[in-house]
Image (cartoon, rainbow, N blue to C red; front, top):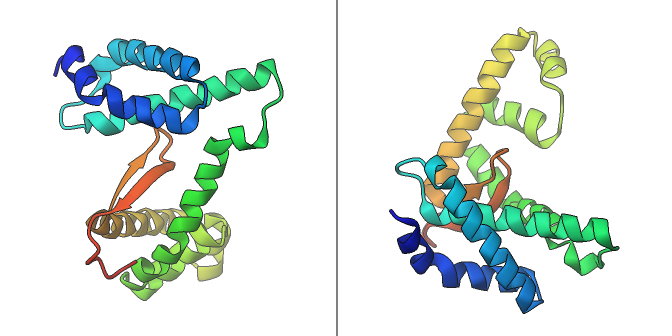
Length: 180
């Protein structure tokens, strides 16, 4: 897809997104131009089959965060301007009630492993010793459990991750999903 086609299809959505995060219309226009430039220079990194919309909104989100970080270096930010930090916690809080039904869908030993390591924050090395397993075996089981849990989530929700794997946003695929 060419840049002109992408931009004509998504410009208004990006502008609405920016208006929800930035109150000054002039800043919104500046950010929109920054996103256009980044889109142009990064278009080659878009993999075939990737969602263009997700990719664009990741660029927009990072650009907006960079805008606020730069602004923070210039002057002290108001607490309500730190929306991007709050959003991370809000997403985790919104998903917390959904995790348990998905864990219950996994085998008990795998669910307990993920609870201990990912939810309770126990170190994998310490947990491996506690169970009498080698650290390598436990790491392998954790990865397998995470993979299976991710498959369950993907069956129920659309979600976008940033380049570090942090959750940016999610949306339930169907109200018929009985897991959350």
